Image (cartoon, protein in one colour):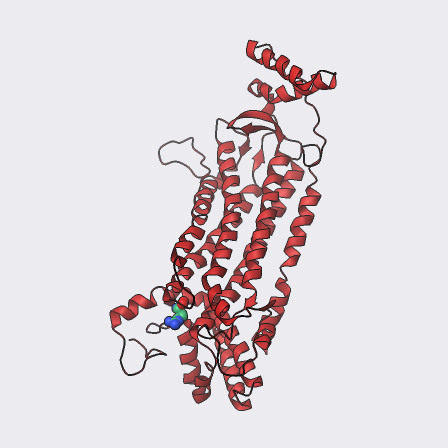
Length: 447
Ligand code: ARG
């Protein structure tokens, strides 16, 4: 049974078109439910202060919304079978329960700024969770880097044996990559952290609303000032967010690709306990690194999403377009995919074992040609001369691995300075201001 649409006048919409245009909203919008109700609580509070709801109406609306919010939290409030979206569901149920006052909630608002607001609140909420996942993985990588600080590993360029490295360097490199990614996540968060409410259909309203009040009530850092621009942030917020998620994904994909290679029999640098591998249905000896492989694949897919979104937005002119609804299909699952990958990498890395005698294999002797050149230089030979001598020794097969030389400068195996990397990550993490948003929303929820 299709409920009457909020916007329906005399003519009922064609059922097939109605189903097509609602699309996936009935499922996806449930993720917005908490945020939709919190946004409505802020909006109703503002309407009351501006004299657009009287005391009794405000009491009824706020009470009704808080009851709905409790039901959303309990998992008993979802978009009903015949209902178009979460915005309709909340308004229909509220009005059923409290009567006429429920019909006033949508004063000075459009679904355009309502869904915009929901997506910004949702994005802030999801990014906080993703940052927590990044923080766990970051901490774990630095912890492994310290624990296996001096375990030697080959370093490769062009996929060929290049120079000596360490597990300490490898793990901290992937941690520092996450610190750079956090810059982009912070930028995306800041873009989401601006209040679009009051832009209504995209051109404001003739009611004397107080946009700074809802900005404060919802814990935003500020408003999207210009109402036309506020509407333009639909799509732009999602794009900035997916770009940041894609950056994180690229770090994870590379880490996973390394792990798959180094777990392979030809390298054998890493080992996983058997319960973190999968077997083969035909080859009894297999212990496959499926966890890392699927992280690699999922994270490679995630890196395509900013492009997919750019195509949805291509050629859209200023103002709301229904096309924008599709952005939810790209954004919402992306958070969960990335969070799952962060989680599983923590599980795998926590129990990843590292071989300590890799470089004893004579095939790695050439890792030390540069060290051999440097010891000649330290004896007084010009670099180019020393390079030729060692090159000749390699060519005629007389090169012998010298005693390894310590790398002592900043950021090298002998001086990782993981403390600097950790400090930078922590400073970025603190710049988000999650606490302001959380405190504001908690106050709205509990009145
Ligand atoms: N489901 C719609 C979306 O995500 C909600 C806004 C609908 N607004 C409208 N003018 N039809 O964009």
